[in-house]
Image (tube, rainbow, N blue to C red; front, top):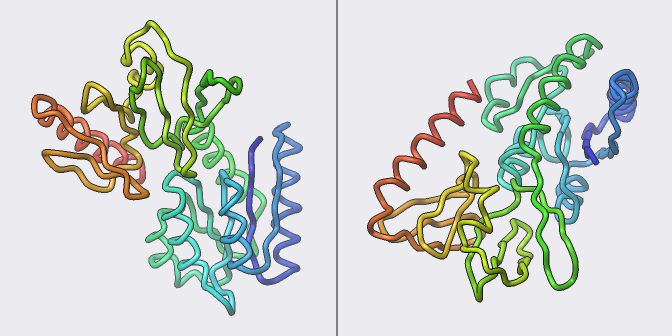
Amino acid sequence: MLQIAICDDDQKELSILTTLIREYLTINKISAELFEFSHPDALLSSCESCRFHLYILDIVMPMVDGISLGKALRRLDREAQIIYATTEPQFALQAFAANPINFLVKPVSQQALFSTLTLALSKVEAEDETLAVKTKEGIFVVSVRIILCCEYIGRGVTYQLASGEKLHSLSSTQSFAEQIAPLLIRSDFLQPHISFAVNLRHVEQLTREEIRLCGGISVPVSKKQYTTVRDRYLDFRLAREGQKR
């Protein structure tokens, strides 16, 4: 289910935003859970155990400013959608360091918020595809965006997730590429090695020998594949930067 976090130290403003968002969800018949936070630290703490698809943040707060909060959230989740809502328009340029989808000036109009929510949720829907993984414990449905990499082990596939968790699929007569075919047809996944595939969204560094992912994970790159891997990664980065403009 869609998870939306709203953070504002002003209880009145928090209530206004929540009411408008609930109205939008009702009109568009969208099921979602809304979580209110009056302190940035409470939101960051909650992010350790709960993933939010959309964050709506105030900027001027006496504890941690919304720009610093947005940057921290972006480090935790590169794909989450962030919307700023503030009384201080002069912070707009600084706010875009966190790659927000929009910057709204309070009092937020219904029209401005609704159009921004429509854009944000369309991006969430596009990003939030899932994969069913059959394991000994049962079938687990995981969001593709949180898969860091896949490794072919013992005729099965081990999926390393952003949370640190690993899922081990059942052994199969299919090849590695066949087992992860739903991922390899995507522009954000590639196979740099006969036994590994990586999610390009989580790449921190690419060298001739390895790909370094978030969380300190390294995946080998075969010599024959390096040029292809480099070109695919650069194309992916350029496409992503183009979408953000």
